[in-house]
Length: 168
Image 1 (cartoon, rainbow, N blue to C red):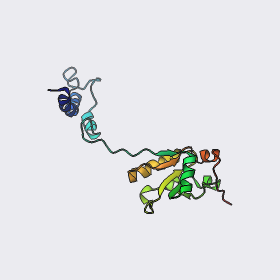
Image 2: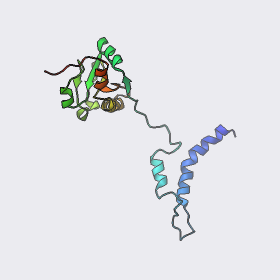
Image 3: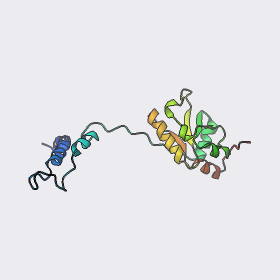
Image 4: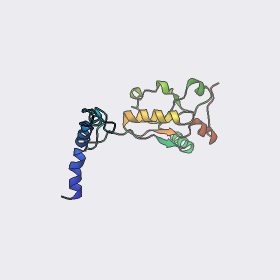
């Protein structure tokens, strides 16, 4: 049997072998009790529940957020057809926003309820890029597609000399 052909049965049998090893413990040495070197009880069940090796297809991964530089975002805003969402708090938004952005604070950002029917691509931003990355991951988990966000947030936007709209 070739190495590639013999590896498949071993991979498929690995969870069973680990379960058997976990069940075996150090019985016979001290009245049938499990020893310190053996796997904890239920190890095989936890291993199987976690998927184990050879348990089938891996779980689907949420696409990673796609960072945009301030210059890239400015070009996208100028070209149009994007929906720019500010996920900062009310107090932060009062200090200024990127012109044309709508405000949905992160604590109220529910991607499942976000109307995406107009065909515009969503771009998110916050103060520094951390919260918009979280919001992008949430939205990507619903849509299955990568979501863009402003790298460095509005701080990077301002540092690049881009316009900020102040509330009167």
